[in-house]
Amino acid sequence: MADAVGERLARLADNAQVLGVTHSPQVAARAQNHLQVRKQARGGSTTATVTRLDGDSRREEIARMLSAAKVTDAARAAADQLLDRRVPRKKTGTAG
Image 1 (cartoon, rainbow, N blue to C red):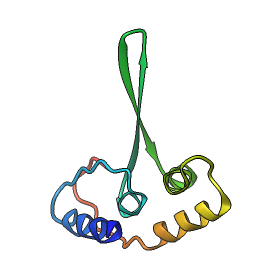
Image 2 (image 1 turned 45 degrees about the horizontal axis):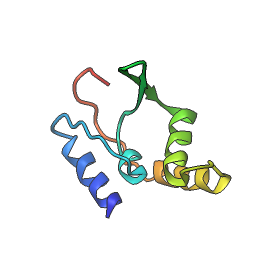
Image 3 (image 1 turned 180 degrees about the vertical axis):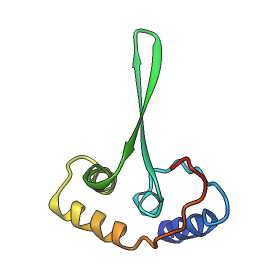
Image 4 (image 1 turned 120 degrees about the vertical axis):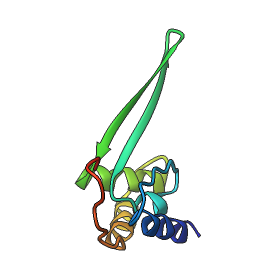
């Protein structure tokens, strides 16, 4: 189901800008760009850090999403499979 959602969002992104927030590795793997958002609360204030992921860092994050506690070689292999299923999409705009 999540893979189908990811594919539909990827098709939609051919003609429109799409911003998705997901905990689903199947959806995240379909994206043209992958941003990781981390939130930290300290001393009564909260900050968010946004990091662009690509290459190995993207693979590791998708593997982490798949495996939860400990990233395993099996999770990395599964992440590779998800990333390999991406269909090259045309780029629109300049924000990517």
